[in-house]
Length: 162
Image 1 (cartoon, rainbow, N blue to C red):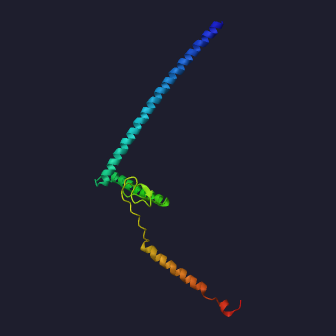
Image 2: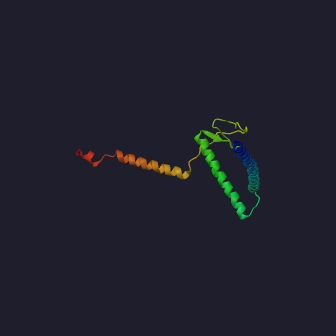
Image 3: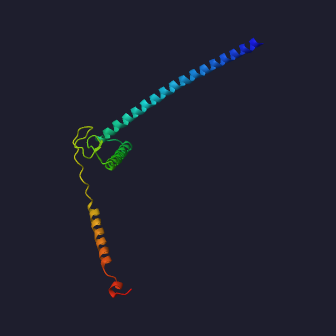
């Protein structure tokens, strides 16, 4: 009876181990295929990205496209413009400037870009638009008028009584 129990137990353990081994093999094979699939998907996405970059470069170089493709290319250009503005703002907040050639954010006091070697002159101070200058002058006039009114004696002060 004891031999049968241990014999049955050994057989059950053997079958279980064999089943676990088969499931592990299936799991590892599945993982390999999933990894290959993910790698293939990344290659496909890179190729699609390269295709998009090629089409966009041709658009920038002046090649004509249908309205749908041209619209997407114009949208990309608009996004690039917005991103360049953000990059410039970030550089200004950090006390940097942007290299006009390679686009690197560099210290304001650099005469040459440390990344590409291009001369980087000091950015010019931005001029205030004329409309803002006119508004600024009007505000100054109003403030002067208000200051003058504040300095005028009131009726109570003239009469000497309160």
